Amino acid sequence: MPTLQQLVAPDDPMLRALRLGNHQFPGIWNHMMPREFLGLKLPDERRATCMNCPKSCYEDYRPDYRCCTYHPKVPSFLLGLASLTPSGEKVIQKLIDTSALLPEGMHHAPAQWVDYLDDLEHESFGKSQKVLCPNLEVETGYCMIHAFRNSVCSTFYCYKDHGDLGDAFWGHVQTLGSQLEMALGQWSLEAVGFDLLGYFKTFDRLARRMQDVSRPDGGWQKEALEQLWGSWAGRELELMRACASVIVEQKDNLWDIANSYQIKESKAFDKAMVKSVPKRLKDQVDPEDLDEEDAEAARPRELWLQLLKSYHKLWDLPEGYYHLNPRVVLSVNEQADASEKYYAANPFCLSFFTRKDGKTLDWRQFLTAPQKELLDLFRDEAHQLDWRFLMRDEIKKVPQLKEFLTEMLAQKVLIKRVYH
Image (cartoon, rainbow, N blue to C red; front, side):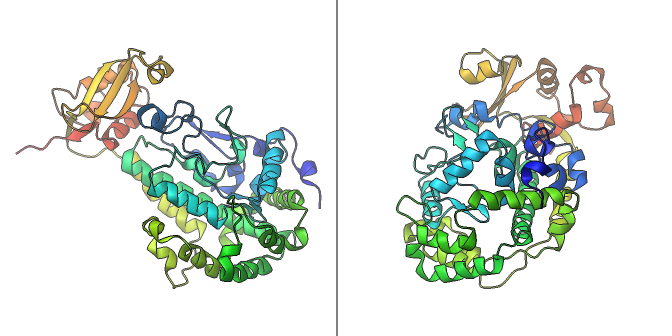
């Protein structure tokens, strides 16, 4: 088999982020996702800007950690591709040194998961100092494997431009991507000769002594790692690159492979991990995680159809008359704070308060002059969003008019007028 370095040229698109609209996804999504996904009109998610984190501006998230107080699962083949970059190779060595790397890829140990649940229980997500993604370069705030992130990190937005509809859509994208990652990750391990069945039997054995699985600092115990890696122990980077190699070789068949591959798991270990959670954190555990029934994982093509249904709902203009929500205040961007200066090119600010005439700010969004003028039309008069309205001369200068209107509807900036 050719080496990964022979298969992937330095300028290969798989080694850089895939840009779709306003978003960046792993380069492998060019091949892993359905071809039709690349043509979708995605929500811009203007408010969820990592380098101007709204949770740090308006809440009390740490500006250096933000939402990276989390241990993501990154599959082996993504780490293998990342290893061809200087920062990616450092990440893999760091994962090995901190006992956070399994044959499947980066994977949190039970103790690390409990720390994460503890942060949720105490509302410390985004503020914690004990749970931090090892892929984050704290000095710069950037992800060191940004072009190789998993689907959870690639689709997470703290605020959604389309509200609940956007939340549902990105949830479907995340689920589809995660299912593909899991299927292809396991398939690639088997394809390179790794004993996957023995691997999960080892998890079954470890389930009987959960107290010996995690180290005091949260990582995996050395003995557990030796059993899980088997004959590949000491050749961790080699396995990551081998998995990436078969993925690259089969890049045109990844969708079909994932749809025909049956994902494996250790239900015994998963249930033992849930049962080992301290009583004080039981409320943070999903009761379905203890369900005894063996549910078969949905095929990616089924998840794709669910994604499409949620996608079409994003861009529908509903019937009825709509006016500006009284909880909305439109004002000039004074550039008085860091967030306002970040959006200096947008001269107006939309402030959404928790109640009418209230003082508690819920969220803000910065507007162009045409966007502000459009919303002004709804201040004193309700409008029906039909073809007549869309053809008005004074609103034609709003770029992506329909997209902006659907966002304002989804965020409840524009609300339906009820006539009695």
